[in-house]
Length: 467
Image (cartoon, rainbow, N blue to C red; front, side, top):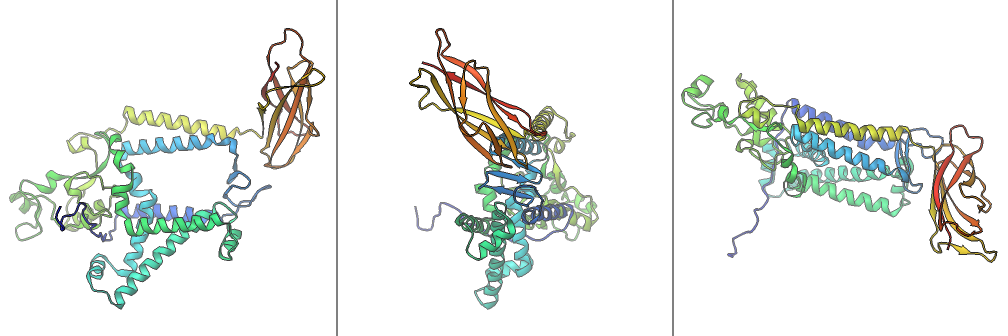
C-alpha cells in the first residue's frame, strides 16, 4: 500500500444552513418540550407524606422510585418490563408507518445536536460565515469565536450531566453539595461522564453517530414496507427527460423548462445545505437520512418563491411513488396497535391495583431442617414484609394449614412496619413427626392487619420438610 493511500475517507465537515418551515417549527416545538421536561422536572416540588418532596426522584438509598403520586418498589420491576415492551412496540409501529421519525424529532442525539448547531450559528454566523471561518488561518477572531462556541457547548454538556444527577437526589440540596464538594463521588463521576459524552457526540461527532454508531439505522429498514412514509424526491417531476437545470434564460417558467425537457428541480442545492448529515436526498433513500424533513422545508420554500406546487421533496411511500395510494390500515399496523393496547392496558391496570402490603417467604435451606433434642423437626423461614403505604402498619403473623405445628416469630408476633419500609423476620416452625406423615407439607404464612382499613390480609405459601 502506498504512503498516500488511505483505508478510510477523512470526515468532511458539515455546516448545516438554517431553514424555516412547518417541519422546522415542529422540531423546535419538540425540542423546547423535551428540554423543558428534562431540565425542569428535578426542580418540580411534589408534597408527599413520606419521602422526598420532589416530583420525580430515584431514591437508591431507600430503593424506591417516586414518580409524582406513583411509588415504584423493587418488587414492581415488572412495570419496567412493561414500559420497555411498550417503547419497543411503539418504535416498531411508528417506524412501520412513518419511517425514522423518531430519529428526526425525538432522539437525544438529534435534540442535542440541534442546540449545538444553534449555538454555532449564533456565535459564528450562518453557513457561509462558518465555512469561511473554518478555512481562514488562525487569528484572534477565529480563536475567540471557536473558543466561545466550545465553551458554550461544554456548558450545555455540563448542565445535561448535572440535571441527570439531580433525578437521583433532592435537587436543591444536591446542587449545594455538588458545588461545595460534599456530594457523593458517583454524582461527580456521572456528571463528568455525561458532560464528556454529550460534548463529543453532539459537538464533535454529530452525524457520524447517526451514520456509523447508531444500531437503529442499521436494522430499521427491515420494518419498512411499500406503505411506509419516507422522505422521497419526486425524480420524474424534478428531473424531467433531460435532468435538472438551474434558473436561466429559457428555463425560468415551468412551460419553458418542459419544452427543453428539464424538470422542476433548479439544482439550487438548498436541500443538501440544510441536511444535518450532509446527504443529497435526490440520490434516493440513504442510510444516513434521519428523516428530519428539513430538506422538505427547504424545497417547499424554493417552490413557494417560484410559485410552483410543493411536494418535489416530501413524505411519500413507495406505493405512492409508483402511482398508488398509501395504505395505513394494514395487518402489521393493526397487529402492533393491538399489542400496544394490551401491554398498555395490563401495565396501567397493574399500577392502579398496586397492593398496599406485601409478604414474601423464603425457605432457609442451609440446613433444610433440624432435628431437635425433643424429637421435633424445625424448619426456618425468612419473612419479608413490605409496607407500601404512607403510614405505620401493624400486622399479626400466624400460620395455617399445618396441624399440630408451633411457630416462633421471636419478639415479632405483632409487628409495626414504618411507611415505605421493609422488615425481615426469621420464623421457626416446629412439629413432631408421626408415622405416615408426608415428607413435604404445604402451609401458609399470614399477616393479618390490626386496626388498618386500607390494608388487607396477605398470605404467602411455604413448605415444611421432614427427614
